[in-house]
Image 1 (cartoon, rainbow, N blue to C red):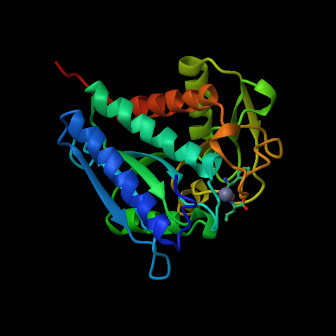
Image 2 (cartoon, rainbow, N blue to C red):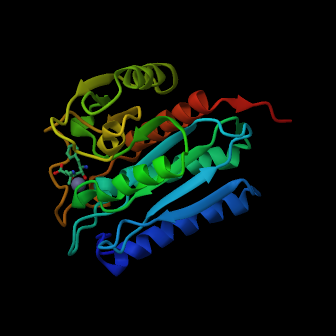
Length: 257
Ligand code: BES
Ligand code: ZN
């Protein structure tokens, strides 16, 4: 219901606060005390911080798993339902399912909502710098930017093949086959189109599943018409399933009673 989630606006900040409260409330209601949520500042010229929600791992110092999307939109009545409300709630749904499952993992899971992506991947650059500065090790990064638009009922899930790690993308491909059962297509942005590129540039392994083939994706992004009416919930659910598989396969579940 925010008119926009622009990184330089109060509603952009409120969106970050809202996401933090949602994931904290989910953890609290699930009786979990192993979630910690923090803001990562987006330099000094952007009001909106990124949100990092971490489920602690049971093995000290283990490399973690990052699952993220950007929360921001452009300014002035830009609902950003698909770009990237869809990825943002795919991340939140993934966290909700995992927190309620009772599963515990050897490795930490970091759920990230990036600020100021639309300003030139700005928030994610600060998040990556923060992980590097704090020496927080990362095993793999899943970027969810646009999961809601289904082109002509095409069931395919797409994998973007540039600014990514080839072996991690192959792993994502195999997870879709094994756990989602959706047909798959491969495509390319052709430029550093989202936050996976910020990780990729600093040498981290990242992958980016995507809603549609490049150029057959949602034509309404960055306009006032990027609304929920254009979203396919059944398409989005497939991306949550994939992200849950990514987390559980990479973070190494530990036996719980
Ligand atoms: N979600 C888009 C990226 C995108 C759009 C990927 C269409 C595939 C198809 C992202 O939010 C975005 O708008 N990125 C910018 C570049 C960024 C560096 C500001 C873009 O694509 O212009
Ligand atoms: Zn965008």
